[in-house]
Image (cartoon, rainbow, N blue to C red; front, side):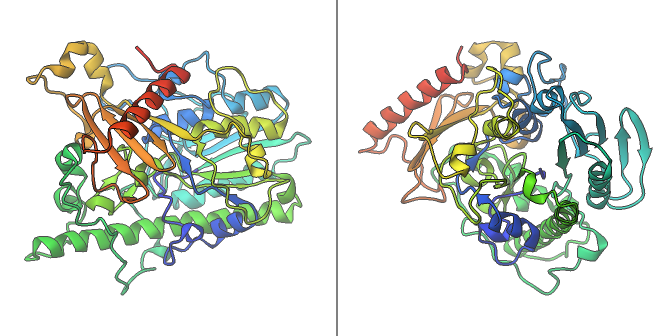
Length: 457
């Protein structure tokens, strides 16, 4: 798992400039999902969801637990897939980024970055003991992964191998710092979005390159026009982002080579994903949180025995499916607390007839403030609450052709998008003549999904 790796920024997902030969190899030798989504586009919730196979309101981690009175942790009663595998006789290890507010559980050994960690000369916490390690975090994390793989044991293993990269502020290794020097990266088609039909998006000013990112770059040239300034920041931002991804990919190659050298590659299930999606210039933004496609989507690549090489499943996958999938391959029964389904039938070319046709999304950051004030706060125009990047709680439903989003903390504000005619989600159709039936159908589906996943009340 990486942090903030956008689906569109891999070669196998169509980016001709990013350098991901090893991720592309993984996709060529396995399956690449084209419709893989998160249930809450934020780091800590995404990680907890992958571990537990459940939504945020079930496992207890709704936000990033930053600047909160009460720190959120995974509910101790929730089973995680590493704990279940360990109980089933697996040797379990965790290396790299953790980004949860409690110590890891279910691992025989763990070596993690504290919080966000640093790219260069980072501290690691190794089974409770801190020590500083010289070098680059992506390389060090991989060294630790190789140490774990090199341990002699007759047990099967589960390794959770998680990178800080490419989380902001992007700091590529020195060998990748100038990969894109002299190249002007193309701009997303929505780079100059005017947010004309989307009030909440228009108000999210501190997600914009031209508003928030200038302090990151003291070398930003003076006397640029606003348009030139925005483009300069984007070029620097995206090139550093791509450089950090190159380090991840290069190190994945080291792991694949070790498994191949040890003759274990074809007997190992490998899943690659990110904790959430990410805006890399789309809508003129960085970060995530919104239910819009760049934030909602994540890469998902699976190489496993029985998976047809180079397959591209179109079935809708969610990050709640990862834990049940891993347990299925290990022959371990998933607990009732897991709300996802194993992707194994889809991966083996036998998608069940009752596979999901819609996905439910629920973003909760700052909902603890609203809860503390009571529901009446939502309709009180004088009530002020802090929202990172000016994005409050919202939920929605996405089908193959439509998306409905409800910003319930924004005065009952709704957005409707026709993804077929408007894949960039520029035209909010909610309330437009002729959309009454699809809106009513989607609202019914949204309520049904809320009941199904027990997110009501």
